[in-house]
Image 1 (tube, helix red, strand yellow):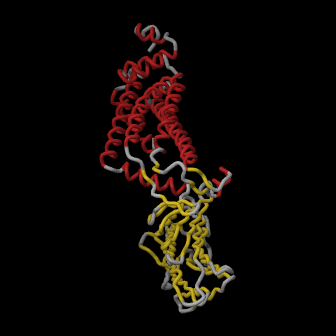
Image 2: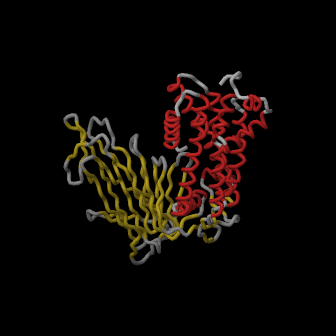
Image 3: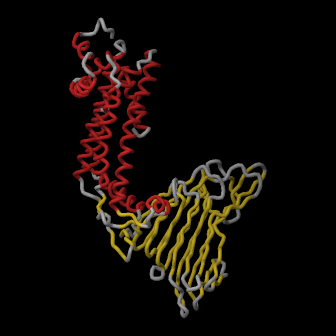
Length: 470
């Protein structure tokens, strides 16, 4: 639209000072999006970028604090620090109030970055789309118009925050014992991220000098899952008991191993054998037969450790996470199970045996003992996923365990039909509303584009945004 052909009211509005003009256009975007987008197209207003980023920053701060305020835990509760938290905070314990403040700040930044990226990605898709469809770049108009349309997302975000404010908090059931706080969380499972190494260490009380008592029962299995079925490639059962002050390890084949106080024993187990024959790679099944290994095969190896709950004290499940060493601490564990899936090795040119687990039993001089199951990924695997499940009396209250318990409880609350469908309805309305604004933007920017073509382009943009989590 040229200056000569512009209506007097649009020309007059373009001469208004920027702050007043920007705020008026925001209101007009809500009330009459086509008229607002005509003004944006005639006189692109990039000040709106700064205005909307500031508005999203102001909105996301209380939204973040409202979110973390839903963790039902007293501020004075002490959370034990993980190794990296110990370095960051300089102390072994962290007040929940400090953790909550830090979590709110982090969440604030995530909300702000999310909306900024949503605006920039939406504008990029429309700029590229109109260049391909109409043959010209009008990036200032589209960037300005997409940013104005985000006022819809701000309004919807405020409504959603209001709903979150109204729902009940997720109460974390805790109790104190000595200097430590525990979460009453007897059974659940967690997924580990980038866990190339996993270590489960269970501490047991001293074996009695007289009599016999069962201490643990370990089952290990290794399977290969691929097209055509599941191949069992290894299995092992290891039992441990206290006999006359020593620990006796019994195996399936009838043999046993005695570990006296002050000594330790390592058990190498859970292997997978691969054979290379006639330019083909095979996996050796438990019965000795050979099965050709497919390219997409997954090796799954599982260890289940049952411990005598009357004898066990704590169980530490530790793994290097994406940023730090992460540890889950179970109190009086009864069953700890670790299931790992990694892609099978490829490109082997000879017979190879991979050992996935090592079991270590250490009996200290005072008679206390620790049993460890350790796995280190033996080769570079493209697929890696790990699940840790447990049955225990409770879980130590740490930043990670509190955050996980809260996210589980909040997810369950948000999945209630009334709340779930309320959020879905609000989301659908916001997307439809923003789509109308964007269609008005395209129609105002390109007068010869049809409403149908504008609608299709906006639909593509919204679909791509949805696929990327925007």
